Amino acid sequence: MNKQIATLGKLEHWIDGNSVAASGSYLDNVNPMTGGPGISVAAGTKADVDAAVGAAKRAAEGWRRFNAAERGRLMMGLAAMMREKRDELAEMERADTGKPMPMAYAEIDGSVAYFEFYGSLVYLPTGDVLDVAPDQHVFTKREPYGIVGVITPWNLPLNQAARAIAPALVAGNVIVAKPSEITSQTTVAMARMASEVGFPSGVINVVLGTGKDVGEAIVSHPDVRKVAFTGSVGVGRAIGHIAADRIIPLTLELGGKSANIVFDDADLDTAATEAVKGFTLNAGQVCSAGTRVLVQRSVYDAFLGKLKKAVEGIVPGENLGPIITPAQFRRVQTYFKVAEEDGARCLHGGAVADGDGFYIQPTLYADVSNDMRIAQEEIFGPVGVVIPFDTEEDAIRIANDSDYGLIGTVWSQNISRALRVADRIDAGQIFVNVWNTMSVQTPFGGYKNSGYGREKGIEAIHHYSHLKTVTVKF
Image 1 (cartoon, rainbow, N blue to C red):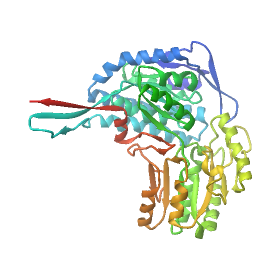
Image 2: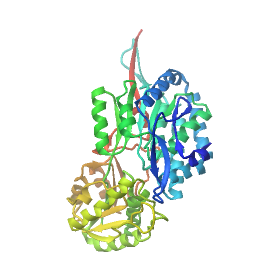
Image 3: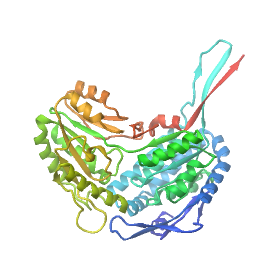
Image 4: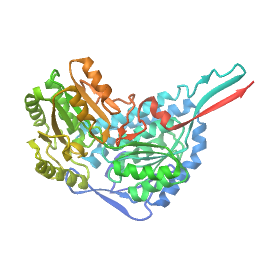
């Protein structure tokens, strides 16, 4: 089944447990590894969203009444099938995104982990008993919203979909998902597999198409009661306006410009290797990328040498994938001119890689001040900037001088200092002496323009459910 999806010229919606052909046109994609033609996907409309929401609405009450054991078995069954089809899913992901196979496999494995993790959490208590009065029995319980809209980006397609869909399902919700029209294959494949392992028709629906035609219709639909969105700040803000008018909750996971702080007592070799990984993983197309490397001035020159050596080991087409979309490929290149105009010193890269496809050289800029555009704006490419600082207070001030607050990293052998700094960085996730080792168990989300709400961990289930209090007087 999945091998066919990977080689088809056209990809259709998945609604009510069936493949649904486009009612009109298709959207043609480009293969980011070659610049040649890619798969075409159905160009969905409001009518397709209405059909998917209708299917979800019919399935909602039945899914809500599934007991924990039944729901957990289905989640584990889907995880097992995804693991069995790991090679085929990874090939689809590579076909859409161009990422190296080790990265594609890591994404599939992470996606499977969400269904395994949340499938095991179905047995946890869903409320508390409160000691209010001797003649009252008071308890809380969690209840699903109903229909949840899940809108995901093109950088980590299956991972981002699974991250939202798995906890939403465990909380008792049904799904209408819209993957990026550029990277849709694995989300449709996951929905197909869910049907194969026994999920009722209509529990997981996937509508393909653009944000304007499909995403907006999902957020605006009167029967959609919660939305999870991962993507740009601009689109997140627009979705927020619609959701505010409708008074529905959102989970928004938006951009980042994360600070990677290196003190003079750090293990500089490890910090340099991890810092380069921090801005080149997935070709920098990660919202949590550590793109601002803050280095204490006393080790600044020595650390630049280590960074340069580490970045020279990142090779486009080998351990560095392409920029996934033509528009983003063009956008990253504009920042090379911006960096030059701002007076930053290019230590490596700063140009398109040789050959076909949308490959950018891994790029490192030194002598950057935090007010430069390359230090403030999310580039979303394999571009890191190095900013010197003098004192602990200086490092904290620079790290927090950003519209974003997604992650932060502190490198220091002085654990007291590392924890002081971690406590004062305005970000949702802080790492000390390691870069970005998040797992499915760790809550993930941002401060400021990086969004609100939390994905992952037990906390995510709370964001996909209402809390009800019931009081019984004896």
